[in-house]
Image 1 (spheres, rainbow, N blue to C red):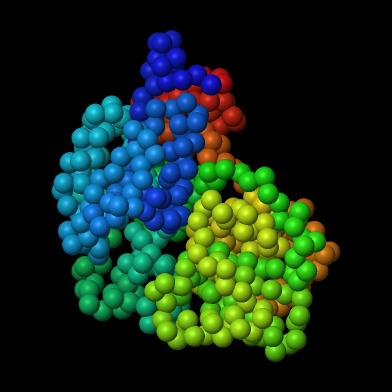
Image 2: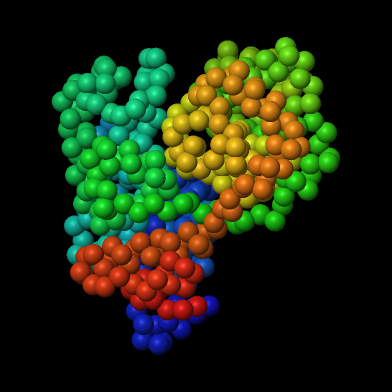
Length: 443
């Protein structure tokens, strides 16, 4: 692999790329910041002069751990951020501009706008000769309710946004507030040269909302590392069929559906099934915690506790299946890719991005959204060697961060060609050749 210095010595420009996230994975472990950081590492591994810029709350300075001189943090104060219109301090935009100019960045890829503020994105848009890309990870631009597209009262999924429905969900805001919010967000995102989504489902929702379909590229998130562990290697050691839940324990992730399904299995005297729950219980209601502890006492549910990204492969390899019972659409849950990487089929709610990632009867099973009885039925059906090994054969192979970076680079070249009205790059940019942004060179 050629170093940056070697490429420059050959007279080939290697312009800088900045990956900008609303958070750093050393502080929080959300899917967007993990995906952004994986892309940054993939770009570096592919020989690109890439930097990573993350927003960090002032109160989290002690948790922040930057990996190298190519990582930067801009510090934000929560009291200076307005969440409805996603507006932050002007200082954030000034600091971002200073870093981008100092590192001579030619392309910037934002992975969120929260914490940073729309004003910062609009300021960077004004810099000359800068290619702008934005990766959308969820629905916050469309939905003020934490980006879940779930109604606040009835807790029902929204098929699409409307000003009237949004105002009904948030009665403290006026219809005019939502009109202005949508216009502000649309104007900001329409100014980008390239929009990227990890799933077709998410991209289609944003096109229906008002973004240009021709501006989108769909690129799967890549895992930081593809593990060598295999769940099948441990299958003889487990005894009962083991179903694992991995993720945030909150109302949107559907752990209550898992608890209800466990109770149905107990009442039906199903003895060959266990459920292991991995996640953090902090912040849950007393009522939920009490229900959860009662479920753990039943013998079917076992609470393993919090986990980090370094241990997830090992923990998943101790399971036969992974559960994703989310009550919202989801987009491209990293837990599904992690499960496939260790050889675990996935049982998921049959909606949204989960349906796109898990093929029913091929790489997992779908159950009806929020339906504990249907989840229990799927688990009983899955507790069979014939079904298990059939699903194992149908698992797709996830991509790693380097392949993710190569696909991004191909999309960046297309955006650059569109800006300059130049020919598209050689096909090698998408089939494994190493790309230095601005030129294409074989590895």
